[in-house]
Image (cartoon, rainbow, N blue to C red; front, side, top):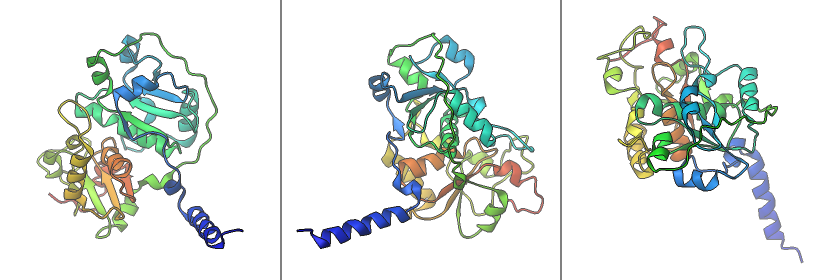
Length: 300
């Protein structure tokens, strides 16, 4: 005999899942941050692709066996006076296809990690791939340096990926533009991921018109997410930093920004993929664009 109670519950569950946003239903097949041990054990998995985003000459000198060269520059597209933007859809999809990536590929992003300048590159590339509609994305904890320090195998043999045709769907909800940021004053939490001297207006980048920060923003530097060894801090330590800056409510709207869009993905990645915050976006134009508009306020 059919259990009508169980049947009704199952039907309700199915209906609930179909009404959820897709991003809440689809789960990644890989942890957001993976260890060198994990990558070493999975190098022979045909679905696992190590994406080496270091400079081409660094890759040519030596790289993780099987890793594909996908240097950082191919993932950014400066335009209209803005240093760091997502590439146009066609260019982005062509790049993904040229690297042999497919929707079910399991991607591990590898970069240098000994300095914050390099540490922020992997989260930026991950957010770009996520923007392109890919979901099985992770960052190698400690990057190339940790792999080498542990005496793991290296190769100088370049890998030529088998090209594919990638046609995904852009996840445009990941980022916001200036007008939207203005509309969220007093509603969203703005997270400035720059160093305190920049946030407080004591210094500024040459390409930024004014020193200071967006009014009401809180400061959570990208560099604070890493240990001195270039690895991510433990999840519980990242949670402490996040809660101190934005609070415990993981449903609240959060918008991250930096000077030019390169660094703001770091905490967008950590807040969403590692700590489970549900409504985080990044402002690509960031302070570079903001300060070029004389009508917009700046605080110190």
